[in-house]
Image (cartoon, rainbow, N blue to C red; front, side, top):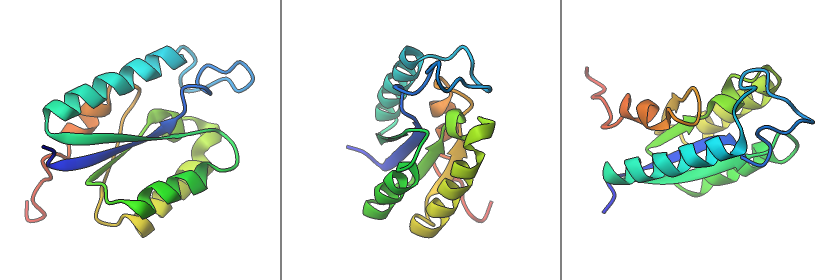
Length: 135
């Protein structure tokens, strides 16, 4: 049984480590590290009673719409934005769009941020269980 839902938004592992689009922020992270981080996060969050879904984005056209479809179709208690879309300078315009889409289509979701594929659960733990609005 789950008591909450988490959506992880990040770069598709297929584009991580692409020599045609090198990462300034994460030059040594590769697709396998991302996949391993997602699998580990899914298992740990399941142990916490949280359902875990991913919205994996490319670097080009269509990323914004893919995210919009994800948050328009379902409520997520927590949305985690990955470092690949947040810390990569070339991704800043897309990241801004993603934040504004989340604010519009999922205003009740808590937004949090990881710093790489291994810190997704840490990001969720900062906000789950959800702190009281009074505190």
